[in-house]
Image (tube, rainbow, N blue to C red; front, side, top):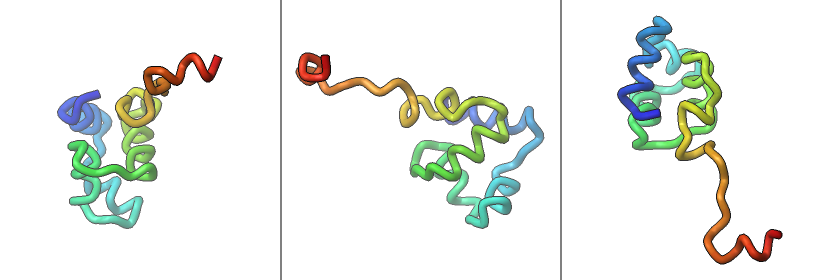
Length: 78
């Protein structure tokens, strides 16, 4: 999911970044940085996904998506 899509989904859910920040006891800026892929926080990413009502793997696929092995290592894993 792209950063803009995350913001749109939060608006649809009636949740503001400030609401998540209060719940997590962090700054509004910290939440916005995670929303915009400018920072990472497992805890905030999971709270954002929960607020949107989707699995964290769908909301932040670049971090939680399907894990792939480094090319060349597949043969060692098999």
